Length: 392
Image (cartoon, rainbow, N blue to C red; front, side):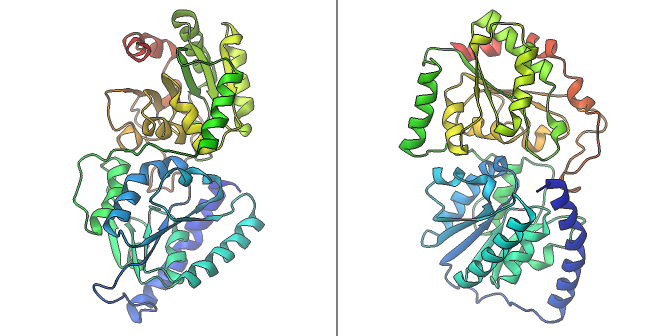
């Protein structure tokens, strides 16, 4: 399913439905809040799109599990995020909505809805910031205690029993953590990401890949992720620029280059490799791993180059130094939490950011000068000290 189509439908019908429900709530509450002090035994966590956002939400979800140690935690997400939550021990069950086609989406949504109704959750925490569908699901499932965001331009706030004001002036990890604060946690100035730990089978799969491609621990393995998620593909730094940087790393540092991506991004990766002029024997492509396997693979890299997309947050969580590129999004919200091991490039042009949580992250921009203005030579000139520290 097309992500922009989903967002347009969500916003178009969401405003109307939310308005009707708000009027109903103010007149007669369909599902009144539970009794004060009622024991929380089952908690539903909701976060759909963007597995990078799920990585950024992990610290908050873990804190919620600590605030309610006797509660079972169930995550509601989409099937594209499968396996990611296998790597944490604070989620007891994961329920997926299938978004590969309209038919699959409708049938899986109905199945999930009736499942949630049967489970009778005591509390739901909604990590979606602007999407109406998550709000409607937890409301119509009869969950009495509902925690979520109140954001300007959307009628979501009144549908929660605890509405947290969205703050666009802080990193998204702190915004997520505001949900835990609303439930009793102490405030934090900085929220640290959580390293993922998958199964032995996942480690074996990655180990076999490294062995097959003659990649050892002493190799200067540099990961490069040229693609981006479905959320506005113009977040990508040009392939020819990635190619020039890869050539520089091979020729000057004898690095091995690992291109990561999905099978759908293979053409993008191949186009980047064609632009390269250095030894192609120093290049390896990985396009067959699930998310937790990708996390293990990225951890083997000395440095990871990435656009503003999910694998960037995965690399940061796994403790890998990163070099990233921002433009349509701002690093103030989604950049690395620390500058000690991370370097990012951002032009801060007049039209940036053009995708925000206020416009459902949709943009009509066809000429992202915020990224094309970041030249490959500028990046190469900035690498010397950073790369040497990472390789030593």
